[in-house]
Length: 46
Image (cartoon, rainbow, N blue to C red):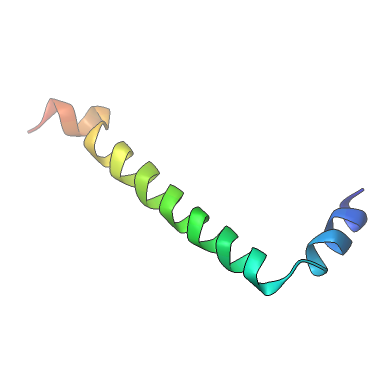
């Protein structure tokens, strides 16, 4: 099944990969921004 997934991924269009990378980058920025603001160590200050 891993091989089949790789096969399918290899045949995706460049536009699909570009859209995936844009959404991935946006998601990572939101994730790390949220984590930075809501970290337990950050809230206890020092």
